[in-house]
Image (cartoon, rainbow, N blue to C red):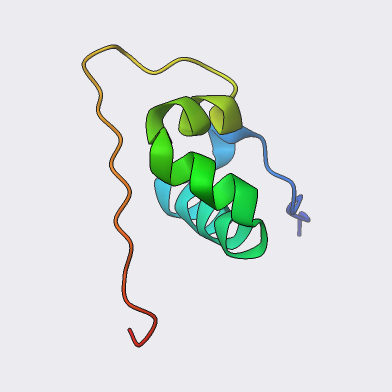
Length: 67
């Protein structure tokens, strides 16, 4: 049996893993949340540690608190 490292590198993370981490960070860090909302592509690139292709758009969808 092999142990999984809780700190997976970006190439091993799924899109869902990455999304969960972003949401948690935004939930706990107001400044990060504001930056993510105002410039989502730049923040996602920073978190990934790489540039996204120019034709990729990143959109943040804020859900109501009661969902």
